Each structure stands twice: as C-alpha cells, then as structure tokens.
Length: 412
Length: 135
Image (tube, rainbow over all chains, first blue to last red; front, side, top):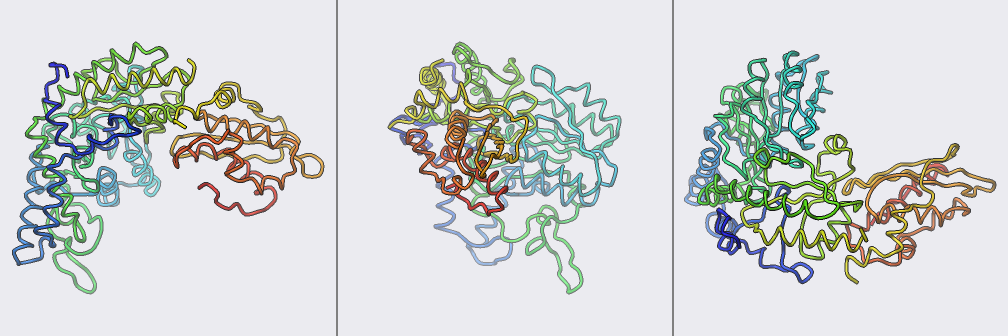
C-alpha cells in the first residue's frame, strides 16, 4: 500500500469480513460503493447484540429490555443527527433516500404544492429524486423543470437562476451525482432558491458517506441520505427537516407511534419526528446505523474524503492510459466525489462487468438509475467504479488489469 | 467454461456486424421491449408473406453484445419460417443458437430479450397470450 493514503487501509480492511472472501477464486475487489457499501464487524455485531440481548419494542414499554432498546434507538438518532449537523428532533428515520423523497412528496407536497406551481430539479438526478416529483406534479397539475449541465458535467447555474425567476415552489437537487460524481454547490443553490421563495430538498445519498456534511451550514429545508451506503445496514436512512416545516406538514403514514390521541372520528399527531415514524420502527438497523456513524466518526470524514480524493486522482491517471477509456464527469477531482463513470471502446458495460467479475472486480454497469442523464451523455449505459474507506491503490490496479483483459477478449 | 469464453468469435461477429439490422419500409408486425437491468433495447419488425410466413424481418436496438448478437441471430433463424414456429421457440433454442454459453441468471435475460420481443410481436398479431418464459 502507498503511504499517500490518509487512512490505514490495511487495518480498516480487517474490520470487513466480506473482504476476506474470494470471487471466482480471486480476491474480492469491491468497487460498487455508490450502490451500497460493505459493513464492518462493528456494525454487524451491533445487530447481533440487539437481537441477542435486548430485542423489544421502543417507546411503549416500561420493562428493562424496552428501556434499553428505546435508549439505543434514540441515542442513534442523536449520533446520526450530530454527524450531519442536524437537530435530533428534526431527524426522521426512513427506509432510505427514496422513502425520504416520497415522504416529502406526500407529507409536504400534498399540502403545499398547488396547480400551476413549478418544481425545479436537474437532469443529473437519480430516479429517486425525479420520479416522486413527476408523480407530485402530475397529481397537482404542477410543472416540473429540469436544469441542464455544462459540458464539464457541472450544473448550468445560469439556467438555474433563469428558472428561479418563475418563483418555484420546490427546488430539489443532489449533493453529489451518483454517475458523474459532480459535487454541487448546494449551499449556493439553497441560498438562491430560498431568496426566490422555494423550499429546498437535497439528496445527500452520495455525499454523507464520503465527505463532511453540515445541513445547517447548507441551509436546506430537507436533506436525505441512506444508511446502507455509509457502512450501515439496509433499510434505514434519514430525512432531516426544519422543525417548523416538519410540524406544519401532514403525517406520511398513519398507524401506531405517530399518534397522540385516537378517537373514532379523528386523531391528533405525535410530536416531530415521531409523527413521521408510524408503526414499529426499524430498531435494529437504526442502532446499526448509529454504529456505522461511530465508525466513520472515528476515522474522520475529512480523512475519508482525502483518502477517496487520492484514489480518484490515481484512478483517473491510471485508467485514462487504457486505450479506448472514456470518462464521464468533471476532470477536476476537487469537484468530484469518489466515482468514476466510463466506457471502454465499443464494449457494453454489462459485457465489461461480466469480464471484470471473473477477476473478482465488482463494478456497476447500466443506466445507474439516471436515464435522463444517460440521454444527456448520449450513451445507453456506463460502467462505474466507486470507492470507499477500504479501497486501496491495489484495487485500482486490479480494475486496470481487468480493463486490459476485456480489451483482449473483445479484440480491441 | 470461464465468463470471458462467452464472448466467442460468433457473438463478437454478430455484435459488431449485426445481420438484419435496421428498419423495414413496410411491415405488418412490430414490437419493442427493454431489459430494465441493462438498458438493452430491441425492436423487431416483420413483413408477413403468403401462408403466414415471416417474409422479411429486421431488428434494431442497442445494448450488450449478448442481447444484440442474440437478436440478430434470431432474425436469421426466423426468416422464412411460419409465424406459429415462434410458439415452440424456447430458452434452450436460443442458448443452443449462441453456442451454449455459461450465462448467469442476470445475463440470461440479455440473451432472451430478442426472443421475448419476437414472441410479443407475433403473439400480438396472432391474438395469442404471451406466457412468461423469461426465466
């Protein structure tokens, strides 16, 4: 391993049991972190510990197990909120970023979006930050407008400012593109959107796992992210919201836990954030997410970002030397998360991924849940390598060797 | 057989030089489908001749080598056949046509997309219900 790595990758890798396994007899080189991350033993152990020692329902029990579970659940809320600079009472646990945008669609959109309103998003969004707003716009008779990109893969801010003149009701944007890696200046976007009177929603699924994020400094109304992309379990994520806004909103789902009082003809709602957490919540995975946050906090998010910047620079240099390699997204790594989307000669990404799999290298291939962006790039699909804390320069070398093999199989 | 052995000369040849690729000026049947996993797309157009024969057939689309080569080879196989021939067409026929590559459960959908589009097209024309043979 090279000294340039800010993190002790060798030691970190020991924490991830899955990295010990072989794929087709080869060392697993996991480069699909933008899809989901692997889990350290510390997170896995937390789940086992909860189910083995204090499994019980939260917020409604007076016995010891229930008190322990409630304490662990709410302590996880505090940790996760602190991790992103949010107030714990303004942090709602959800299944993931997709559920967060759908929660805002129903609980905020139903009440606040009117016919003829404009909703602004961008063409670099993941489908989870497009489709809920399409559905909302259709239901309400609102217009959905897309901000385009400049040739370097950054947002066209001039076009963004133009569309703000329509006084949109909502501006929704990704913090970091899952395809291009583009890191958007969400602080500037939210400030300008706010001036124009818009409510703001930021999709932080690709940002929170990889760089320091402070939602209060960003100044957004809503910010969403997924636990499974940040070393946590699947099925848990968070939506942060301004408390006043969350209080004004309608509930998302009805059921237990979210109510204060239920009568035959009406009900009243529990306080925020519980108003949005109907039914028995995902206790184990929430506590697991807390453990993931502890793990990342111990590493330090600035160091995580530095580590990925190092890998990104090395990957861009190394891979661009492979004949037929075409990269999509900003060339300036300072504007980019640890994501490299590319194509190789005339090899379709799925064929490439099949050949790389044989070498133990796992990458994403396809439209990456961003079909409007694929159209803008004028490609049907791309391949994507994305990095995390346990990736090393050796992993980049394994990818490069895999690309060379694909060239030889495809005779290019 | 290793994964890279899937990409035999035959498949690469049909991927790079697809036979029957393009559109027909006149056609009686057409269908389109995609493979949501890969984003593979296939369109098939058929001109029906006397006695319900597949007189002319063309395909167009984009996608991986397996989906495109498989669709192209299938059009060659189908040309001149009776429309009802498509009813007995099965997964095994497609795999045999491709030289029995060792495809996993996700990639086999690429190989079968052309057959799915052909069946959709012809069954629609004949008014027959398409049974799911995707897996």
